[in-house]
Image (cartoon, rainbow, N blue to C red; front, side, top):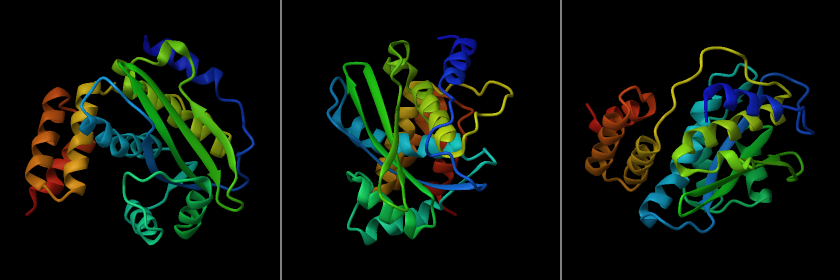
Length: 229
């Protein structure tokens, strides 16, 4: 899909939803996403995407002044306090508890499914005050369900989260570079091995991500983290 078509698709979806907040910035916590049944790639890739998808959502939302993202380390600690790991399924009640613990107004969690290249991503926006799901946002346009467009899928879902949480559409500007699916998958595998404590393998996958897409800040930061002093 051409960038102009993607931008038009995004703007159509930016109606102010019930989650629109009254104060700025709105604090949100991005929690783990669950693979709800994917086929067509190694299971290791899907386990990795459960980490890479929320990490990419964080990156996509981090530059919007209307939002403030809860600290990743604090989110991880809050998840551990609920007995949950990085690949856990998080229900709405638990999402609300974790979000409230880190000072977030909304918690975002969800799931994905890759059926031999047809990709579906659903993000649930949870009100941390009452534990209710105020909106589920997805890549429901059939023109944006190809695994090859994974970064665009995450991007459009991130924009819809922004619209629902703040009532604001993303501000105009230069079109961001599109991260190839191979690079995003390798970055996700780097995150997976890093969480398992295997810095050598994590570093290999971060470098592969950079080989596939040299201008990949998250992969570069990951490589630096596991490289150490």
